Length: 237
Image (cartoon, rainbow, N blue to C red; front, side, top):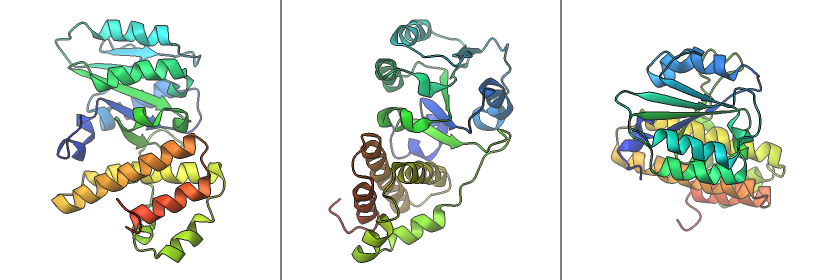
């Protein structure tokens, strides 16, 4: 389990999830951003890296089990596992991967890359440090959603109901919540006040609940309305 103190920085997460624009060059994208995000420059032929799904095909449970077996052997140095097109994981494969994330092998950093992160289980995403990359794949995007978050926390009940009306469609609500989660997790790195840290962690949990509900096709407007109530403390916590 990730503790409050550990949650401050992504290095304590068993995996990173990189949300990217649609591209068939995900391996190149990982290599281009590895030094900044992983603290080590990776190359396509790096012996410290195991690449999965270069061909962008379906990833089944047998492949995840093979990965589990491979990682069961200890490593004397840091190793990386990069799963490209992670949204191609089947539901069974995702559940098997979740077990791996719950008990991550030592000296191992997993990187999931996806242009459709909403297709991954919310429980997988909650165990990952999420990074949102720009379309070029060269630089990290810094989504300017902090102001929106601050405004949402100050909404009255009637204002929250009004704002939620703009999120009747899943294609609008889902990316909004995804971006907010990424933004709040990035904010964790800059917070030193314990009370502010606890507030951010609580609000991230609220967003993850909303994300899971949206993925389960619960009424979008009602999900966002409930999220706004929780963020503005108009609902029981």
